[in-house]
Amino acid sequence: MVKLTTINAIMALALLNTQLVFAQVCLRDVTPQTMTSANFDFAVAGEVQDKLSSLIWARCVVGQSWNGTNCVGAPKKLTWQEALVEAQTLNQGTDNWRLPDIKELNTIIDRQCIAPPINLTIFPDTPASQDNGLWSSTPHIVEEDEKTNAWYITLGFGELNYREVTSTNFVRFVKGTPISQP
Image (cartoon, rainbow, N blue to C red; front, side, top):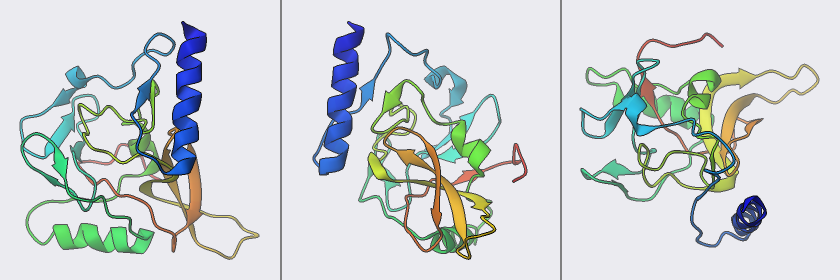
């Protein structure tokens, strides 16, 4: 059974590179579940609160909106600076939405799943992409590189990576007391 599951995962990853429509693959027989719905409070529409960290997450990525059941609309990719500005725009009211730091972002990755590595019950309609991911607020400094980079998590395997801040990625906002300092 493990070999068949591994083959399914490899096929799903191959599809990631071809930009075809595919279904999420979760290796439930191999890896313990890291993100369960029981760890979240769904009391506020379009938001979900992590009971362990007390962070409140937007259920949809930027470009999508919550319709009461799912995230609808096209996910929008933003540069890092555009994502920071978008958070400020959202905060014209009383909310304190922000980009999560890389440690916070890592807490919502479901290590059982790929394409995307997210629990789709908690965060429905999250896009899957090995080429793109979710931006974090955490910069990545490389002394010999004069470019400005920031950390993100890929939406294929859930890997931590960094790229130039002028590149684009998807964005999921969070609010609440930061659990770590970059």
